[in-house]
Image (cartoon, rainbow, N blue to C red; front, side):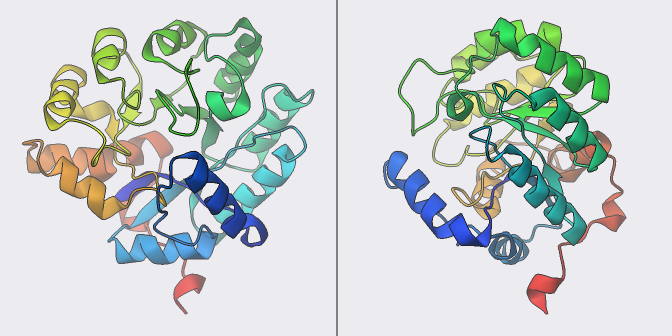
Length: 275
């Protein structure tokens, strides 16, 4: 079985424009889908995925509630969405409480898009409320191809932020995109998860094997970063890391099942897309 904890989509009205903008900013990376929710569902089925999380991102205060309303729709349809808050919004803490009320599975924060350093003191109140609510938080970690340095969620900064978080924390992209040595130095062995998205073609195989050895497979979560990478690509990369079948099963579904609280036999893709 396969659960993808790192996928993205957009409302139909803006999906095409959003993909064009993000592709251009990232140097022309070609997306693998049309950016819509139902397009995502179709491509997940084609890639052999049994269930997936959608990571929604609020990039300004004005869109924050609409982003979480869209996430609530995804949940109604059968996906496992994460909501988002814009940290500088005056009602950010209230929106965290609404995310909990909506039954979303956690909070996605992208420090580069949302213009904050992950260890900034202004985030302490946000982190404490996420922890109090018992939500999971996933950070974009490491570089982002659409932004220049300095990057806002480097492994050393994330390590400092962890002292304010008493909840499940996921550092995307193997703990830090294009920052493997820093991940090995600052994050491996700490009580947080890494998702293994965007490894294919971007992470040296030997570096990934070092991270697996030092961090262990019980805190690794399968992810693709669709539509920028596909689940099949990431599975191909994982297949080169000399993992046992039980380690692969933990990464691909068991760890996410424990973290998000779903039963593997209950996994299914939203059906209306395939009628």
